[in-house]
Image (cartoon, rainbow, N blue to C red; front, side, top):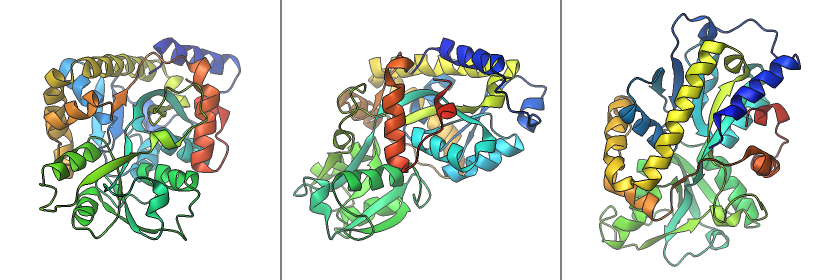
Length: 345
């Protein structure tokens, strides 16, 4: 995650260059309260946020869980959201499709987490040719979501055409996991700790009552050629806001406080997962259970972190990674990311 000075400097530069959007401020910026309205789906980047809520309950933060990232656009327009945690490439895709939102990537927080869980005798994406595979969402179908976009890019890296060489089915993670366990599909795209849990349970013979031994293909390892990223890591999850929020002092101040708390939580969770995972999972249950999300066991979250299958990084210098971040997003989206989207890094 990047230092908060980057955000302030980007905002100041925007003002100086006259780049502030001329459109009237949204309802979110006209509020009298000073809290930040933050939204997120039930994805890996939400765990440090939950820990931050537990460790710092006085944060100027109002959190709203969402089932799918498709909800974000309207929430920004109606003032229900000032910021969101989501896949970096989902944010970039939204900026390309809806430039009026003025979305900006403020920081990158999840650098490892996506895997393709397959029967143990399948060792690569190339061996999935001709098979049925599942793309899952945390609660929705997963179509066009974060898992789908990185899956499609990984398939292309394996010199496969997802529309021709594979049968791709979309469904919520719970249903997809059941199909793989029953031998009805040869793989499922799922983030850790879900992937970690599937493999672990299969080795104990308890994955849906199936005797199929599972393993996980590391998607991070497939995206070679980005020299500024640590080996096996990709800039996956990020904190996003809008240019309008950055230019509005009360909103920006709240954003920076939440930003700092999230960074501290990332560092603490990586350092002491066994002690802190239960706190994060407890908050996860309180905030996401009302929309139907199921909290993973705290032990599983801690195990995923210890196994380096889920990595939260902090203190990454923006100047050294911006070119590779742009190239990574361009590859996943098949379109050039607007430089403004990365200007707050």
